Length: 181
Image 1 (cartoon, rainbow, N blue to C red):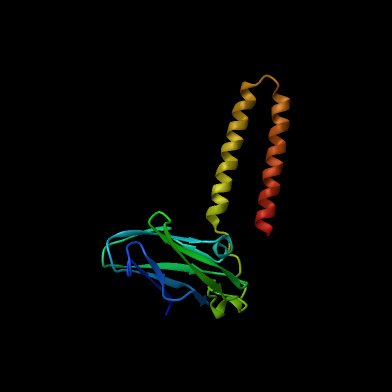
Image 2: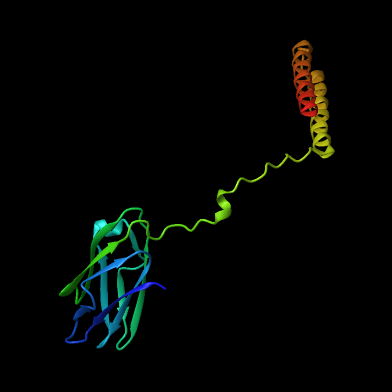
C-alpha cells in the first residue's frame, strides 16, 4: 500500500494550506491527498530540482472542488537517497507550505523476474526451406534474361558478356556458399 501525505486546504481560512506532517520519508510511490474543506480552489504542487530527480508528478496545477478530495499519485524512483522540498501553494502563491521529502535509496525502480537471471538454452537456427532457393533462382533467371536482352541491344557485346559472366560467377559462388552452410 502506498504511503500518503494528506494536506488540508481551506480548513481554517480561505486558501489555507496545511500539511498533516512537516516531512515525510518514502521508499516508493506515495499519494498526495488534498482535502478541500472550503470553496473550490486551485492547488499548485512544485518539487525542487533535487527532488525532481527522484519523483514525477503528472500535473502541477490541481483543481479541487468544494468539499472534495483529490488524490495525486507521486511516482518515485531513485538509486541514491534524495532529500528535497515539496511546495504546495494556493491563491496564486499567496499561501504556501513546504514539506520536506526524503526518498530512500533504491526506491521504486523496475521489478525483475527471477527467471531473467537463468541461462536460456541455445536455439538452433531454423533450416532454410526450398522456397528460399526457388526465389533466389527466379531472380537469377530474370537477371540472366535481362542481361542477354541487353547484350543484343548494346553495340559493345564483349563488355556486356564480360559483365554477365562476372555476375553469373558471383551468383554461383553465393549459391554455393548458401547451400554449403
